[in-house]
Each structure stands twice: as structure tokens, then as C-alpha cells.
Image 1 (cartoon, helix red, strand yellow):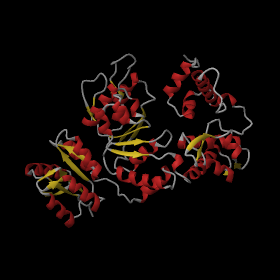
Image 2 (tube, rainbow, N blue to C red; image 1 turned 180 degrees about the vertical axis):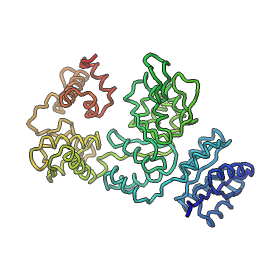
Image 3 (cartoon, rainbow, N blue to C red; image 1 turned 90 degrees about the horizontal axis):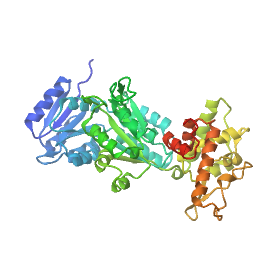
Length: 473
């Protein structure tokens, strides 16, 4: 038996446009029905099982948004895209938030229509077993915030809408972005992740858009940009707030037009990518301060995901800790260790300013310090990372006390004591001590030191130069 011919419903009151789309889709081997009214479209859905739907926003007897909501609620496995007037982004964003799969601007570009239907007809079902297994591997934890996060990711993965991820440092923004990609119909194409804070402003344009040979000193050959490398897939821009205003303007055009122009080239390249971005900063505040473009903010902030901090995830802390113990012991080829009851109690009381990343660092160090078959309180408290305990009664934070025998007094002072040299000088001394500690622990591997400190390589380089520690320069 042959493959079942896809059936798509076209909803628009412009007869000529419907005929044009019908002819285009017929060449793709797609069968179509046509409805010119909202009421007629709803009736067709009750009679036929459609693989996808394309609707205009302005219908004679109602809004296409009403059809989007109806299909999303009653036929959640059927992707629905909307037709919008050129430049009418606010309504398009409303449609995406209502559950639309994607949108295409009028006048219709047949290439974009072809791409849209190809993606729509390959949307994975929400209840796929493979999706559940993938989530379990990538998102560890059973708390209520994590369950809600999984449901949001499933729905968002099915659309083509831009996604903005917020959350504190170390909460796993790249993990979530990658999961959205893996659950989407773009998962057979690349997932390209870029940390905008790790690339200098001078190199950023070349990295994103590519360049032609000879366009600047050192450009010895053509280079493909990361946006083009993400063609067909997803582009994840972490710490997008680090981009300069000039680069934000160029990125905005690439996102809107789906076209890029490499440095030194006079030709534009069409690219089809979904943008997912993230930041630990408040972009709305940066927009008000004039440090982030408002038009780019609205373009990337269509669907948003807020990642919960680790301290709000309850028993997930122990689930993650045991996962990291098993993972690290396997990597190091040593016998796995168990957490004692005191160790578990201690971990559940911590604030975890660095979230999941901080927890893993603490576990890794505890495994290093433990010569036993278990990890106890002393192994966790020996960590040089300052952990903050939760004061549940007062709702405030307080420092945990390091009871280890190691001398780390240069980094800590009594809360009631004011440093004689003044606050600025004291903080600089603390900062330098922490940098040296991280560098010594990583044998002066600056990439590893930056990762251990939870900062970008560029930020580490700046601080090393500040204290005269960048010996390579």
C-alpha cells in the first residue's frame, strides 16, 4: 500500500488565493479542502480528519484566532498556521500564543509555504513514547515545577514560534533549549548553541553571519556563519542580552526576513531556522534602559519559559545529587558512593545560588574528598564554594559555616566585622583569591576555571588582566 496522501484545510475568503495555494500544495502531493467562512471551517473539522490547516486571520464571520483556539482545544494534534498581512506582527504573535503552529505573511511566498507545510506535516505527537523517554534523560526531577515545565516544553516544541527562556544561572537553559529542538519537527537538522557573552564584539558578526575570503585581515577563506549552520534546525542564543545594539539590529533582520548577508558578500542567503534565546537578565528592564532593542524583544519573546531555581524543587535536589554521583563515579571508573542521612539533610537546606551547576560542582568535589563508600556532611562542607543555607523561619538567607579543617579564612570574615582596608579593596582581594583558587585547582586551564566559576571565558580574561594574572599576554 502507498503512503496516505496528506489532507490540509485552507480557510480564506479570497477565492483566487485559495486556488493558488491549492495548486501549490497539489504539486507537493497534498490534497486540500477549502472553506471561506469560520463556521464552514469548524463544520469541516467535525466531518474530516485533517493533517494540517492554514487560515486567514480576517474571515467574514469571525477571526482566524477563534479557529486557532477551536483547533488547539479540540484537535490538538493538528497543526494550524495563520496568514497575516505583511508587518502585522502583533496579531501573528497573538496567534502563536493561542496555539498556532506558525504564520506566513501575505503575499504568499511559495517557497515559504512549501517549507511551512513540510514542517507542519512532520510535527511529532504530544504523547509519543520516545518524547517521554527523551525528557527523562534530559530533565531530571519529579517536582511540581518540573512537571509543569515538561508540559510547557511539549506544547512549545510543536510550534515554530520563537522561544525565550529565563532563569537563574545554572538552571539548565541550554538543556531545555536542546530538548525543545529534539521534540520538534526540526530534530533531524542542527541545533546550534552560541553563548553571546563568550564571543568578542569584534568577532560576533563573522561568527553569526559568516564572511568571504579577504573581507578583512586574517580572512584567508570563506567561512559559514552559525546562523547558516542552523539552517532547517534551531539557533540557540544564550545570554542574548550581551549582544551590542548594532548586532541586535542585524539579528532582528535575520529573524524577520530569514535572510543573511555574510561579511564581504553582495548576495543574501535564505535561511530557515527557529530562534531560541535565553538570559538570566531582565530584558524588559534593559529595554526600558535603552540597552536592548524593543522590536527585537517582541520578536524573540513570543513563547516564554521560566526555569525554576533548584531551591524550589524540593526532593529533586537529592534525585539530582544521586544522578551526579552515579554519573561521575562511572566517568571516573570508581565504585559509586551513597549519601548519608546527614548529607541529604544538609543538601536540602542549601540555597544553591548557582543551582544545578553548583550542585554538580559540590558533588564532584565531595567525591574527590571521600575515601569511603559514602559522602557525609564533612565532605560536602569542605567545598570552597560558599553555600548559603535557607532560613525557613525568617525567610532570609544566611551563610553556612565551614567546619572543615582546611584553612580558607582568607575568603571569609565574621559577619559583624568590617574590613579595615575598606569594602572595595576587601572585595577585590576576595575576588583575586577565588580566581587563584580556581586556576590552581584546574592547573591554570582557564577554560575549565571559567566553567568552574560559572562565568564566560571573556569575563575570566577581563578579571585576569585586571589583577595582572594573564601571564600569556
